[in-house]
Image 1 (cartoon, rainbow, N blue to C red):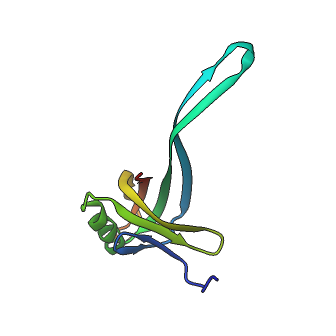
Image 2: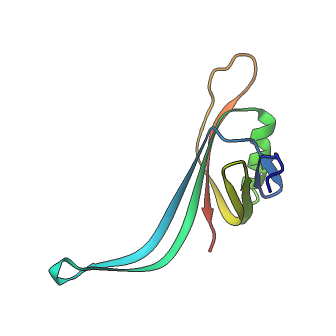
Length: 119
């Protein structure tokens, strides 16, 4: 039963809700096209990739995320939300882009985090 608490957890921190979350399934497989148009496929490995895109993060939020990134070890990631629940999954963390928008007096940052499932 859902208790009303929405959380995105990564390692020892609770992440803010991302502006955009993308789930991608990555598959390692071999596919053969045979005579008469028949195709066979052997899947060797299937894992999941989560891409979280953030906008206007504060210095404290960015530092908390970077503290987990600098550990350079597999982390536990989970989501508990109304329409989306992802159980604890071991992931490796990477960051693909960081930008610094003009926001006025406060320092803010846009950040894209890529979490790759470890098998």
